[in-house]
Image (tube, rainbow, N blue to C red):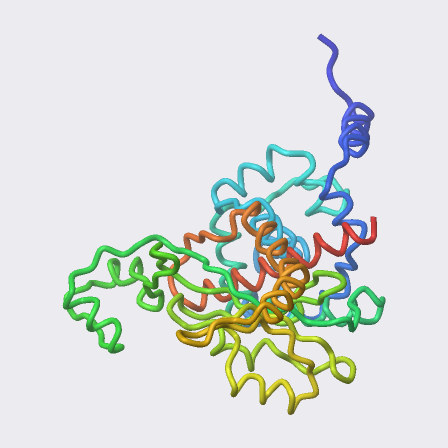
Length: 340
């Protein structure tokens, strides 16, 4: 049996390219170096005493950031990420920029970098940097905004009634040891929608009507009503009387007033009430709005494909960072699709 040489490996990578490796497109279309300065802000912890030759050189921050991108792209655990980096050529090519690497980070290192990125709030910061690039390139238009929210579930807790009451009141449960407390999510909440129960959080987003890019986002526990986060995801109008779309959950006199004050043109669904149902004219207007508002469902559909509607992390801080990365990965994928 013939041994495989360097050129055989190159040929195999060329075959992957011909088959349409999405990671190769992602690597080529995104300006990764534009994020370096922001990513380097986590470096203060690597060598606090500035000791020279203190062990192996740290992994490149862009490489580690790409690994976290991969995790959210394919919904992979730290242990599986370590294995796949060593096993899959497409993963190695993506994180290394095409170079051959002799060392790949293990699961503990991946966890460490994710914690450092979380502490520095990297997801939100890189999201803003990338968004500015989208504006400069004219990818994001000014044709309107669409708002909506989606559940992000987490492992369900099995607590007693007294424990749940204390959690809701923000009290510490003394009976829990440190090990048990680390596994308990005291920030997630239960809620019911359409007779279905959910436990976890919500990803509130506003989306550009033309490009379907996410413009703003916010994270809350699951019981928070969609309309309560409108101020955080509304942003400023990008033109006079910019259309603003949302389902009837966002309809209220207060919200209509806010939209008018900010110079938006409300396209939020109207809703009927007891003894005051919608007129045929209102129903027709709602159907017309729905054709546009439904575009935001494509965003959540892609996130469902990425298995982003269920996360294994504990606590709002970790969930918030993970949701930020999910929204960033979605925008990157959408950008590559539009550019291709």
